[in-house]
Image 1 (cartoon, rainbow, N blue to C red):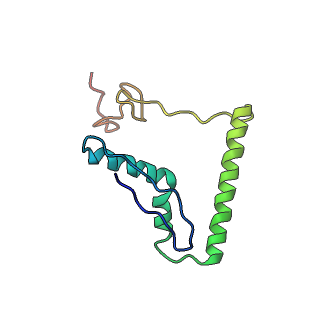
Image 2 (cartoon, rainbow, N blue to C red):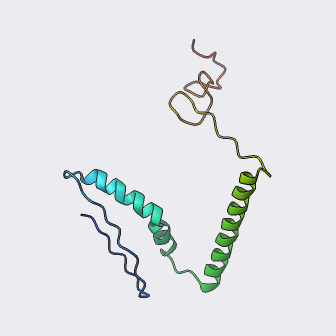
Image 3 (cartoon, one colour):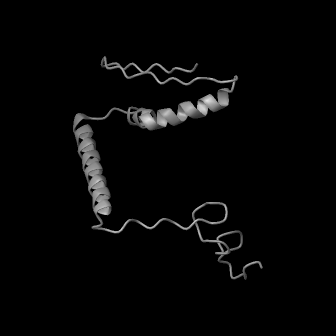
Length: 118
């Protein structure tokens, strides 16, 4: 079982993340662990703590994050109420990736003056 300890210097403690390793499949357990850590924001916090952040910079960042969250919430609510149109979803190609539809010319040699392969 992979269990990263997550105690902090300031005395706070988060719930530990636990990942069960089934059938000795460590690769799959690591993928699950990374996904959980990503969801918890561990990587973002590690990146942020790499260098010292002045208290004034911290408050400025936190205010900007709060404004961003409020705008996102207001935008989602306006979309739900029909006040603004929802953003258009990109068309998917044959492989399910964003881009032009089938035969849209997004593959090899596209946009080079060559006719599409028939």
